[in-house]
Length: 468
Image (tube, rainbow, N blue to C red; front, side, top):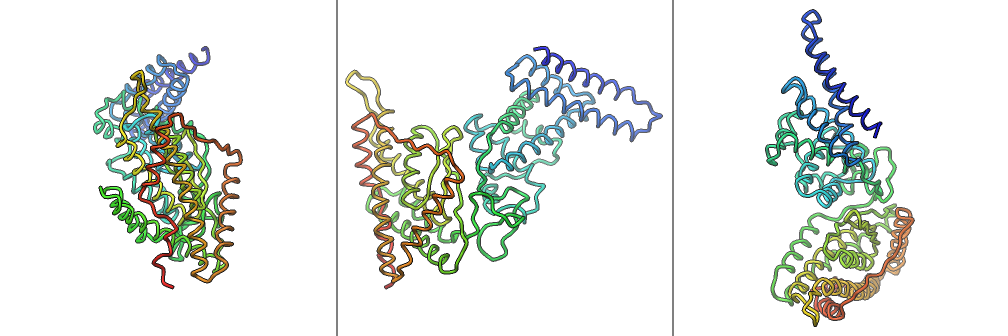
């Protein structure tokens, strides 16, 4: 308590000294010197107050926090002092966001965790902070996957001046000055206390553009971070076709049409995956597994994580769920990662639609058992889908090898599976496998039935239309 009081007194003394020195600067010192001296004092005071406010917030000392915020609102010098505080906070965001990149976080990860823990308003502020921090990097030093995430988040600098950004953001969000400062402090504290993650691609400034015409940016020093890849990326035109097919499958009210559309989408992805595996092996490629984070949201997140796990397993990938952070990390080769992400998303839509169609449930006493029913429904759906996918994948691989006349296919696929396993174990040495339980028998039976009816023809039809 004593140290906290000393910290408060020190910050207040700095604020008073800043005001006193700014007023005492005489004309003999020269206008330029006065302004520079005032700016330096204001910047130093603002930095001390922000640091003290963050510590108060961390200690849940609401009284001290209110005092620090009040001092920041009443910064001396009017508009000059207000902008000094804004510049100070911009500097804090630059350092804190930059540190998260070095700790393995990516733009969509930050947005997801902020939205999950603090809500949409601070998530929007986080997107602005990301755009602000990213301006310092040359485009050639930013990984392509990173830039795609920035575009997906629409992380752009829309304000005129950095020292007026928070004012403009407050106007947009309908927040007064004190509320803006509290929001800013909350976001800084959240970002500054995030754990380190596994590095899945080079952070900004540490990548160099791949000039070979395919693949992602690589490490600037020639090395690869854990979980990176040096291989080819999936053809974006093919991905667009797959997305279009799955979108139609999810929106149609006719089961047979959805089945045909999903089968065609899976066929495209499976063919690409097998072709890439053979091509890489024939060229002596040194491709290595990559990683991708997939959001796992409430409700029924346990069952959703299980669904992602079985889809990943059937596509020669591994999935590791970080429950407290709201995502799973899927490890595999790029074409297989694309297949997992697209297929999981589509199956989740189908499962959720079937689950909602089944309606709510009550026990004999009239109490709701809807939650347990739906949890069991999704858990059963995941188990059954996993069985169907695994059987179809094994059959499709054997058929592809026979039709291609290439006895190397199965060993190549087996080698890639081993590579994925080794990469996953290196990235997550303390993995703990957990089973998914179901407490509602009707939900389990309904989920299994829905899985059997899901519009999914997997790799048992991959080579049906392949030229002989």
